[in-house]
Length: 79
Ligand SMILES: [Zn+2]
Image 1 (cartoon, rainbow, N blue to C red):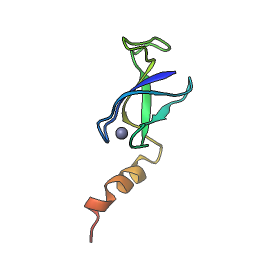
Image 2 (cartoon, protein in one colour):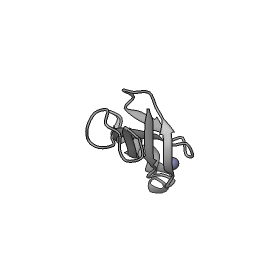
Image 3 (cartoon, helix red, strand yellow):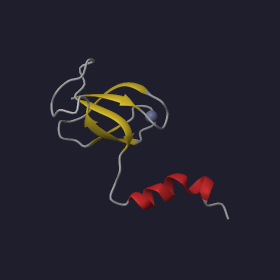
């Protein structure tokens, strides 16, 4: 399935592919996991550039807090 990527990490804007039912894809540039939402808000419906998913936000895992600490740790936790 085609995914429209609007990467919040590196600004990449383009297409990548994922399997149908996958809830995340990876940015082609940054390799960061991005959450796949329905491009039009409707399951299986393609948007104007033919993508069924839109990935414009980070994949949120159950361990969101740990993920945040990991992501911002370098700048925020210098002791
Ligand atoms: Zn990226």
